[in-house]
Length: 246
Image (cartoon, rainbow, N blue to C red; front, side, top):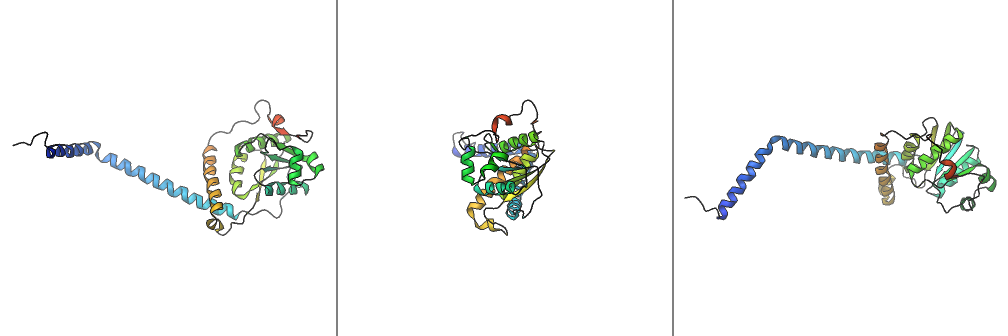
């Protein structure tokens, strides 16, 4: 005697049979695809974590050079008093003919910036250019490239924090291929010897910068736009020594 179709045992048996049929229809290929996907995700995670370890170790070992060869110009990316102090000291010591301060807040004029940094008035008047347009590292690279090209510089010194240096070099280097960019990393907190592992704040900053660096590497595979096309924008976005912003 066959069980009634309303019988719970019958319904359960039919569900099991349907499940077996469905699994058979997918076949072993679906299982292999899932395993391959899982392995790819695992490999990607291992690669990402390993890359972070290498990145953190590299930037934590960077040191401010005791000596650097004289260049045509100096570029500093805003983001801390120590960066500005280092760049102004390089300019004062004759390591470059001009200094570009990139990424200055629109409300910060030349005189206020000079007072904040304690820079020499004559030095600011003759040799400092201020970029108010850049809002991020990509913008820094674009404005810096225009500045380098407008002066036909062949060699510039780049000043920024040690953890920020790899991405800055990558972004600027892809736009100023004809000029050599010399890194001048500024170290705020010594992290060499694995010190970044014991400082949660530093670990967070380095990890955030690492994710941005990975994105920049991916973006670098795309062709860079031509900075020289059309009218240069630097004339409108960089405050030159002849303009008083205050």
